[in-house]
Image (cartoon, rainbow, N blue to C red; front, side, top):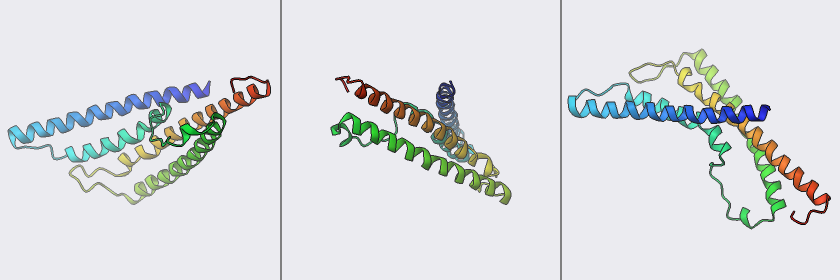
Length: 172
């Protein structure tokens, strides 16, 4: 049940990331239009564009993992026997989960430091930097939750393969 909830949240995060793409496109197109026709650019367009890119990347990471669209080097992987592939999947998802959880913790600490120090953006908006930076640990947290789901999935596949082998299934 909880795994389906996490996967649903990952799907929603993908849609939210898509909204970020639309917002960024509208801001950039508006800026170009105003700059070209009226010689009056949106002075905050660069700030919004950067914030949107960060938002898109981190909020969309969980869906990317769920859809197995992250960069994968499978040159040697495809040549390995299925059982070795499953063990490699287990190891890589567990290591990935651990790494993302550590980075999530560190990024949350980074946002807290930025909040306490009162840093603001050097751009026109003078945005308190903890606000756009908060997207990083939130997105990483969503990504780590999806990594946990993926880890459970590959362990379950490995277990089912092991059970089939014990039962003498010739298709293993």
